[in-house]
Amino acid sequence: AQSVTQPDIHITVSEGASLELRCNYSYGATPYLFWYVQSPGQGLQLLLKYFSGDTLVQGIKGFEAEFKRSQSSFNLRKPSVHWSDAAEYFCAVGNQGGKLIFGQGTELSVKP
Amino acid sequence: GAVVSQHPSRVICKSGTSVKIECRSLDFQATTMFWYRQFPKKSLMLMATSNEGSKATYEQGVEKDKFLINHASLTLSTLTVTSAHPEDSSFYICSAVAGVRTDTQYFGPGTRLTVL
Image 1 (cartoon, helix red, strand yellow):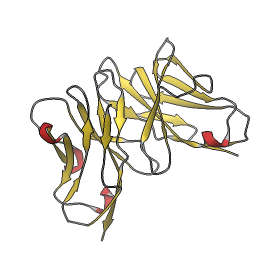
Image 2 (cartoon, chains in turn blue, green):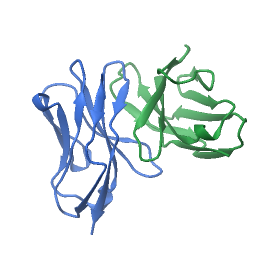
Image 3 (cartoon, chains in turn red, green):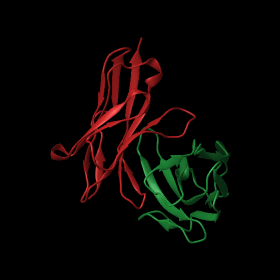
Image 4 (cartoon, chains in turn cyan, yellow):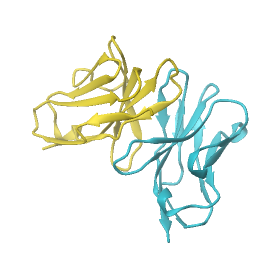
């Protein structure tokens, strides 16, 4: 069965520290992988996506993610977190038909 | 670009009534729209896929008679929660796909439904 697991429900990091949010997936075919961010009152915003090619994907707001097929992972990273990065982050897997399966989400808090 | 709006942003209704939620793509045409439901501190659950001019495709376990979806134009899809009950209280989110490329969805801000 297709699924996405985000092992960390809540993460707190200090402003300026590095960040890594974990995402593992189970998918029968070559997956399309996404990271979205959800802030209160705003729709989900696409941070980055991986379809094929270079396994290190650069996104907006300084985020990047690395696709590791052997580990079925697509972890999100940022070298230096800003207070405005506090939000809910969702990893998702999809296909060409557009259907997305979301992980449970990771809530990120940023300490001053 | 690629803005999706939802109306209303929040609605409170009495049990037994019906509520309509609108999803609009403001600056692009969306042949496909999706409807999701999000419970507190939970993931988004796909409810149905809405294609302009055809019947919606519902995910397993979603009652099509309770959650009526209409995609009457390339910029508007509506979700009607019929005979709402307190357990239908949730956050409903739509997304739209621009043109024929279905790999990137643009999400609306969501509608908070509370059924008393």
